[in-house]
Image 1 (spheres, one colour):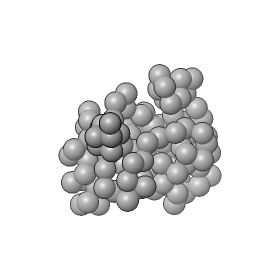
Image 2 (image 1 turned 90 degrees about the vertical axis):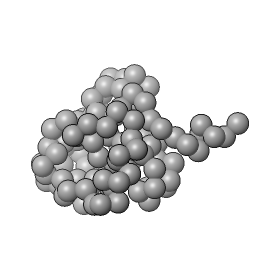
Image 3 (image 1 turned 30 degrees about the vertical axis):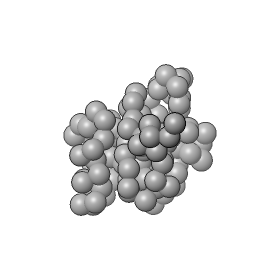
Length: 113
């Protein structure tokens, strides 16, 4: 099992969280399975950026992003060098520290009136 530390987020995880995840499972699925309601508007198909996360520690234990993920990340709010799409980043063996951005771009919600 891989320890995943989720830093506090004012809405999704106010106290922060320490969870155990299975290597080979995505960061998004791991968070969802543990009660952290990370947005995933495209149903985890690498077609949006709503599951954007920062990997503050353990980034090198993840396989590198695909070209499709890199292209999509360019559209993410608050992109930084530690950014990954939670639906594409598979847990490895090493501990991860995840920060969920304060904001996300969700065209589905924003365009739905």
